[in-house]
Image (tube, rainbow, N blue to C red; front, side, top):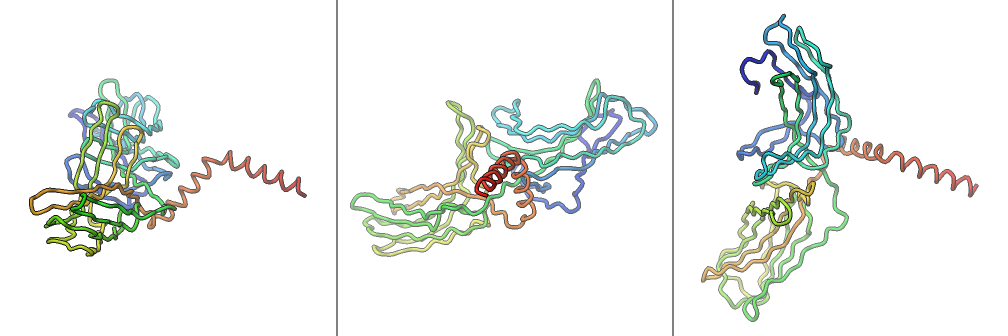
Length: 333
């Protein structure tokens, strides 16, 4: 399958060097469907081959150069003409000249920084892709191949519980407690709700997980709220002194890690929304932000690899620190 106009004399294709062994991840496309893409992490090398196949063997293909690019970009749907690139790497595979037979070119982008998670939302898309191009005078021949990037985190050092109160004077007083404020994507939200005072007739109570996507800055800020999950806590009237346990399993929902101010273009935040509905259909609610993160347990190799790269990035400072340590030892000696 190729994406070229008719009359082109060659096909171009990108194949990853570890395509047979590399894990794939499901990712939502713009039309809401899910496809599988090769999965990468920050700091991993991206390597492979670009195949240029002549449609008419023996016929020459003149070109102005052949290149492969690794691109990370953010596209805001209300500003489709502008792609904001935060990663842009280029490898030249061939100088201007001609090809007389089908050829394969190797490429390698070493320890590529991939700072953000791939994301497709209501108003914004963050994607990573490889693009191979045969540059020609009139029309280039090119092919793009999307990949998916996941950002991994370790357990947060501080993860305090959430305690809050909902109240209407002399009518209703509820305390609710969630076991922590930061959850990994396969976690369980455990909590309790205490009814201290109930003088209105509550008929229904639920917890919603709300995803809020914010795009743009200043006066042109867009907010999109999406209810990801609804969890019924109780159906019927509670009584004073009653406490209701909550167990909400996150693994079954389509969640991403919390993203704050990604490249100054967009944010994705999550909220727990406690909703009470009385017999007259009045709604009372209290919202609390939670932080979601992706647990990096299966990819220890990748994580250690990232650590290596991080140490390489700071090699200069580490070298100067060890030199200072050595000098200090010599002085004390």
